Length: 405
Image 1 (cartoon, rainbow, N blue to C red):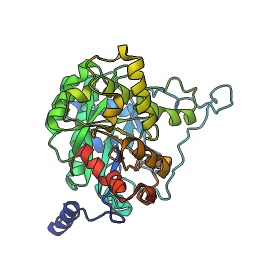
Image 2: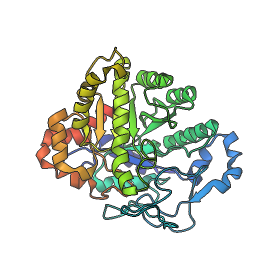
Image 3: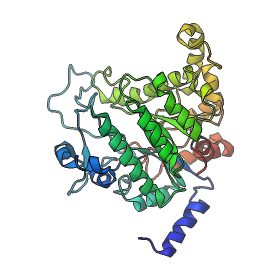
Image 4: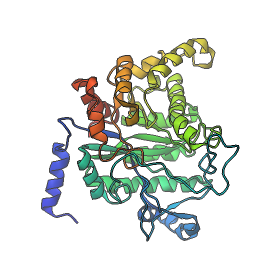
């Protein structure tokens, strides 16, 4: 329990937004929160908790942290009900004829200078807040952990509901600084709509995060109730690419370098094309659409290419489409998080083509790709953007996408 004095101090920090960095308020639009099996256990409904003993054999020890740090026993665990798909199963080094037999499992190189504080992405909210303070971050959007792959839709929804309950508790201590997304499943649309209704007014709920079954396009009419519910609640819809997920994990020649380079942009390219091309933003005027951890330098190229193909391949689009695809990208309801390695010149180029109302600062904390604890310093050094565009990228665009914290 917190003392009255410490609670008041926390409230002062959250309400006044006193963190900042170099005079800029900072909203980190892409971070991650992944509770372990032990953390999530008390948040399952009673029926699911009865099944936990039978799931013991599906627990996988969590020996390597999200940034690549080696953890010490006793280990916590994650659930794995099915074998993972994709290029992570077999490693073929480029130039070799096939995957190496019995190759040791590798982890990406940590790109920062100090590992994030242990527990900050699991159940230690104070550790997370300390890391935020170290980087001068006022608010984080935390991507929730997705349910482990399973053939049982009820189990998938049980994990989603438990994660929402956990998120409610985790964010409640700092409601103005910690935000997340409501996970919705394409395999349980009606149940997912109910989850939106339950959590839409929670302080942490900044949008919805579609978890699509493989083969389910984001523009499928069966998903319309999700967009309607998000629209009614005034929430954004978020896409986040992953390396081991579709599209593309089956055609990357068993090589992680190709996979990590190609899968993130391609996943977002496909999602943007479908979401814009289906006219979803026309039908639901209150929702915003954002792409996270998917790169951003390709946006002007993709906007121009979509515009051309919308004419050239017009027979594949609905006749009712109200705008050119690029106009959805620049119309004030589309946002994209930056990835730091693409750098200052790329960010300026995107602003020159699309305007300065699209890009949002992000770090990928606590994953290995983050530059922790120097992420904010590196981006604030992009001086050629100018102070106004910098303020929009570091704060204002995220608040337009996710709402004022």
